[in-house]
Each structure stands twice: as structure tokens, then as C-alpha cells.
Length: 268
Image (cartoon, rainbow, N blue to C red; front, side, top):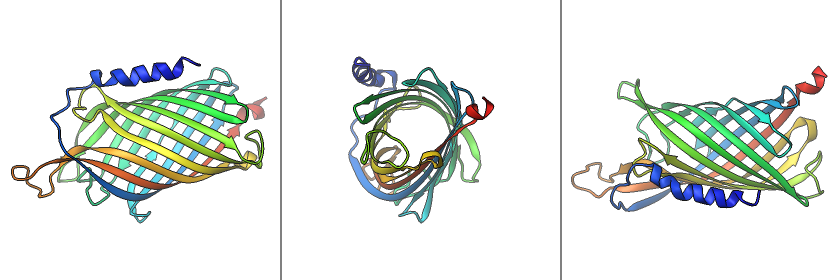
């Protein structure tokens, strides 16, 4: 466990060498979006080792008034022990045109395969978890006639570190309020990346309540710094204006409901 942070640092350090060479320096432009994300995460325990996993998300921009992205992510998890789990699955996402500097001209679909492992540990009353996820992405490219002409393949690497701290108790049990925080770094690598090695970074802080068998409810603030793939030209004409790398600062109210169903006990 003590060697894990060093391993992650070395891995992230060497990821740029896997990508295509970045273009020459391009000035940076930042702008802000204000969003509302709603997430429902369910785990159904099929056996003592195997879980069925589902993640459904509705993401709205413009203070929740406009569509941003819709996502469903089913999968299977294998619990090696109480501290280590493996998993994999599929993701389908629809990303809409949002913000006053949209990254995409049209709404587009995306298919992903994902693999992950999760490490968990507890120090006194504090719970720590580390998730490493790989994604193989097929991103739809939509033409003027609103049809998907082709899919662009891309790889992405995700590192998430999370902490849960009970407030009115020492364990994450029923009736406990808790403080939650995490950071997730997303890195692109391989072909079709170009200068977009850095994809995004997410910082979250929130308050949760464990309702026992009913599930957990969390509300918090998520800051997402995202680098757009395209170069933005304010005049719309590439020949007469300077281009910018656009970074979105997405300020998000995140509402999460998570629950578990234990079918293994019913079978026993």
C-alpha cells in the first residue's frame, strides 16, 4: 500500500510519452459554466464476491436549465477481499452542445469500455479509497445532416482518490452524517490525442448521510477543469485571428444517491 502513491506518480509522469507530439504553444482562454449533475449509483450483490454495478447520470448546464450530458454505466465488480476489488463494463453517453463556447457543434454519442481496480483502507475513523480506471472510447463525429459519419477512437486513464470522514460517529453506519472529498485526474494517451494529453481534473467536497438499507445521499460542490479538444478562434476565421486552447471551469452542484441490494443473503 505504501508504494502505491509512488507508482501512480511515475505512471502519470510517463504517460505523455505515449501520446502524439503536442503542437507549438497556443494561448489559453478560460471561461465558466454553472451546472447541476444528478447521479444514481446502484450495487446489487449477486454472490459473496460478485456485484452488479450501475451508474446513471443526468448532467445539466446553465444552472440546470440546459442539457449537458446523459450517461449510463453498467458493469460487474469482483471483490477479491474487503480492501481490493476489480471491475469492468460499458458506458453509453450523449454529450450535448452547451456553454457559450461549445466544444462540439452538435450532440454526439459515445461508447466506452472500462476496466478498473479499487483499493480501500481505513485509518482510525477515516476511510480512504483509490480507484484506477482505463477507458477505451469510441466518440461519434456528427455531420451537418445530424448523422454519425464515423467514430474516433481514444484511450483515457483516470485516477480517483477519495476520503470519507464520519461526523457524528466513528464508523460509516446507519444514521451517520459524513464529510466526503475526492480528486480525479483524467489523462488521454495513444493515437488521436495530439496536444490533449490533459483531459480534465475534478475536485469535489460534499456532505453525506447514511440512511442504512435505504442508501446514501450526498450533496456537494464539484469543480471540473476541462480542456477542449478544438482550437477556438474568436472571429471564426482561422486566417486572420489568433487561436486559443479553451479551458472550461465547470462549477457544479452534484447530487448523488447510492444504494446496495444484497441478493446473496436472499439466496443463502
